[in-house]
Structures are given as structure tokens and as C-alpha cells.
Image 1: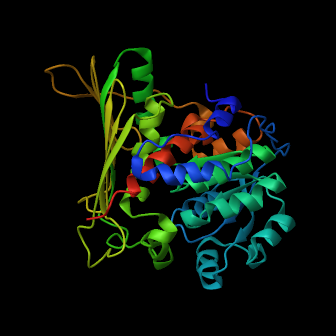
Image 2: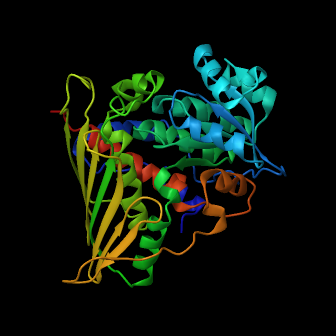
Length: 379
């Protein structure tokens, strides 16, 4: 379903789903090369541990990779690009990284270390720049969510991927939840179908309130670097999940509300956002916020045959009409979807298919949703 032919179609000029986003989408199309004949994927022929390089350390999620490389024998960090010496030194000390891994030039790091893939942990605004450096060198990319916040940047990444035959994948924590996978299986099997309403709640109390590092919050709260606040940071989860659950269907309308509830903390970006998507047979409500009282990553699917509540990791419940919810145990995930590093090693070596949740095809649609939503005035 999610073929290279579909990617070529997605790269063609599109009619924007939101009138306010139309000029941006139309101007971008002219900048993108003809993708009618995308290059075949240049799978890695390496064996042994995944040779991965880290591009940027300003994204707080980078510590997940640094921890994994320290604890696992199937992941090998071969280089780190990070202009901030003090940031590298701090994390290198915490995770026992050799000083020789550090580079302050992305091009120099890629040429010297020749990684199979990179984990992109820069600000979101730098994703397109990274793609234009990595793709011509045949280096596959895993972007920490989202792929981009603007249609323009997403199309530049897609063009680089298509031209040079490399994978441009996007990583979301929720992609590795067994609860989410089982929810989709229940829908596809017809046990809980068809979907009529989708409700997504993602976020936490706020990046500053929960103690994220300053290097992280500096760009996360800068609209030029992050595209917005909670609307991008957590709206991306519902954007990709709704696109996946609707099997790549585009919404027919996008409505959004962006608010700054805590202006003394987040004066430049929204800290609370709601996005409403309309499909021919369903609706989705995406609640993205830095104003929850607790960490929140959950979705509710309401179908003609009952509802599904999928929360973090294995937490899953179903509910029949006029009955209380009952917890169920999700099926085990396929082994290649155990976590992002197992998946990345196998997918870039051609040992497993591209998972739709990480795919460029679906993430291009998710970015279009985010770009339309962030065009809504902030209150």
C-alpha cells in the first residue's frame, strides 16, 4: 500500500486542506524535483551492530539512544555531530562517549565515519539541512518526531530521499506501544469497526515544568526552530496516528485552536492546542498540551462495534455498548518492531518492510496537517 509510487504521487503539487496554508503548499511544489522515477532504496550491506551516528544533541530524546548504545551490543555509535562542545562533554561524561567521536562539522563527521544511518536529534528546523547532507552520501535517516513542521521542509526531505534512494524515517514513542498496534489490529479485523471518532491526548505539564535541559527548551519554545509549541511537539502524535488508522486517507478539513495558557513561561509559542480533522466517515480530535497535570499519551477509538482505549505501552481496554470497560492484553509485537533501534537496523538492511508509522508517505500527510494547524492564530 505504501509504495514508492505513492511517494511519487505525494510529491506532486497538492491542494492545501486549509485555505490559510494554500500559498505555502503551492510555492513548495515548484521547488521539488520530478519524483516520477524515485531511485531504488540503497539498503545497507553491513552486518553486525548498527553503525549509527548522532546528528545533534539538543533534543532531549537523544539520551535514549546514548543509553541504548551503552547497554546493547547491536548498536554502535561511530560519530557525533554537535556544535556545542559543553553539551557534548556533559553527555559524553554521563554515557562514556570517547572524545574522538565528536565533530563540529556535519560533513566532516559523515565523511570520516561513514555511518549506515543517523539519528537526527537537532531542532526540527534543521531536519531539511541534515537530509541534504546525508542523502547524497547514501546515509539513511531516522528523524526524532515530527519529520518537519512545514510542508516545504518535508518536501525537501522527501525529494532528497527519493533522488538518492535512502530512507527518511520518523520516530515516535507511540510507534512501539503494543496497545496502539493491537488497537489497529482490532479495527482492521472488523472486531471494532468502522471508526467513527478518534480522540488523541498527548503531552505533559510542560517541558520547563518537568525539567527538560535548557538546550532542549531553548529551541522547543522558539517558533522559528520548532514551528510552534505544543501544536507541533504533541500534535504530531495524533496527526500520524489518525493518518495511519485511516490507512493514509487525507482529512477533508482541518480546524485548529492554539492558546498560550501560561504566557509568563511560554510567551512565544502555544502551550495548548486542539486540532479537529474531518474525514468522509470519521472525525479526529487531537488534544496537544503542555498543560496536563500528568504525562499523557493515549487515544480513544469509538467504532460502530464498541470503543478502544489505548494508553502507554501495554495498557489497553475495550468497551461494548452500555457496558463497563474491560482490560485486555495486546498481542505481542513483531520482533522487528520491538524498539526503534532493532527496527532501524533491520529496515535499512532490507530485512523488514518499512513500517507505515515511520514511513515518509504517511509523515508527509502528518506534516501537512501540522502546517495547516500552526497557521491558526495563537490566542
